[in-house]
Image (cartoon, rainbow, N blue to C red; front, side, top):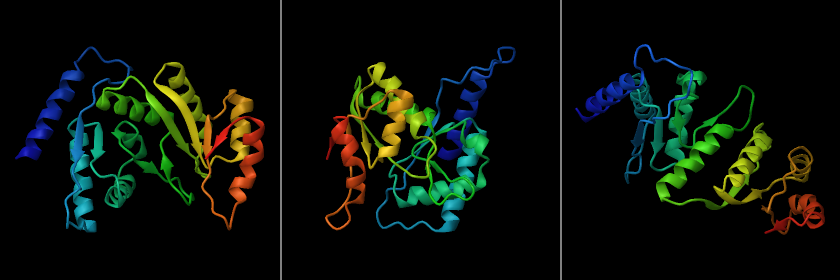
Length: 219
């Protein structure tokens, strides 16, 4: 009953936004968010459970929900997102705000977050939820298969100019990306965290000369 009431309320709110005769191409500013609790202890989700959750998420989308948050963004959430990705057209997913959702293009070995729009939405949402005016630091984690690094860096720099971010750091960002960001965007990371070990220090050896020469902190 609670589930049906949620769908009915969302559908009503959706109809309120879409008033006949007032159609336009502007983006909707209202988010109807459904929080999914997958944080129960001693609970194991089967494939059929995930299929049912995705089916219900589709019903919620049909009734106007355009934002979903997974309470514990762990392995269960990743499995749910993978099924959602397979069964939902990409154009439909892109109209929603899905916290932490990742996409995997055909042939790609890894998955990554959506581009700059999702980054802005997530940071703005975090500021709203915490009541803070800005974030002290945002950490950009490097993924060799992602095409969004420069786009995301440009977006983070814009948000830094807006006063929403004080510092932008990197995680395992290679020299090549730092050079391109400096050349094309006139951007420099405040810090680059390099994860390596005493046996294999290739990552450290790759970035250390550039960081030393350009005063980029390392840790």
